[in-house]
Amino acid sequence: MSARPTQQADSGPSESGTVLIVDDDVSVREALDSLFRSVGLKTRTFASAIEFTASDVPATPCCLVLDVRLPGLSGLDFQTHLAKTAVPVPIVFMTGHGDIPMSVRAMKAGAVDFLTKPFRDQDMLDAVTEAMAQDRRRRENEKAIAASREQFETLTPRERDIMVLLAKGLLNKQIAAQLGLSEITVKIHRGRLMKKIGAYTLADIIRIASLLQLHDAPPPGPETDG
Image 1 (cartoon, rainbow, N blue to C red):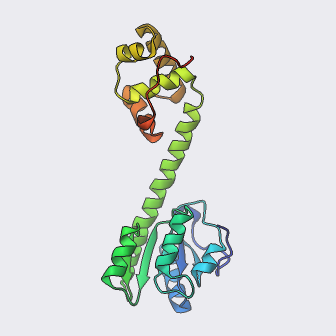
Image 2: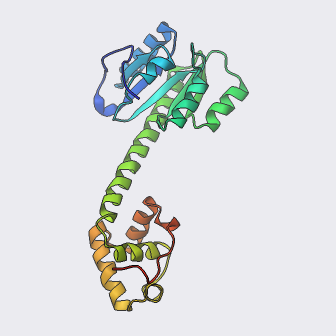
Image 3: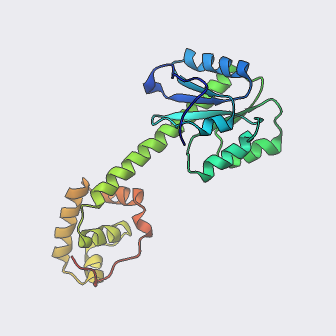
């Protein structure tokens, strides 16, 4: 996605994150813009989902405050569109005409909250705070995965095999038997791989393996070179 928001400039401190507001009612956009800026958040405003799709999602923590009823693509359909295009922006829905099936659909699809207009300012701020926290956690997790993947790529094929088997709960003796190695050789490879990935304990290995989903990898056998 790329960016040409209704409000061209961001406002507010960059470290606090950005609220992306999509509502076809200019008075609602302006009121929300003022509310979020009053607590130090940056904002971008859009009059429609189509306008939003012409914009870049910020590279910093953000969330989407989205009206359900919009011209063209509705808010709920836009939520589906974002999911299909792998744009993981947490969504807070708002509507003046909400019903239970609509709210259930939105929440099942991952919305953070579903607020009915007129809503209390504090309810909106609470929902946005949670949405922003979710996005921060996602970004931190993605950074951790990327760093762990980079470290994993430095391992030799044999070290990777041993890490996979450690992640599956095998002991050094069991790994040695499965790979056709001596136990001392396994210990040497284990020490080297721990140093390369920055692991100090078996728990560290398991945590990193979990990030990389190594538990699902097929168990290696003695035919692997290393």
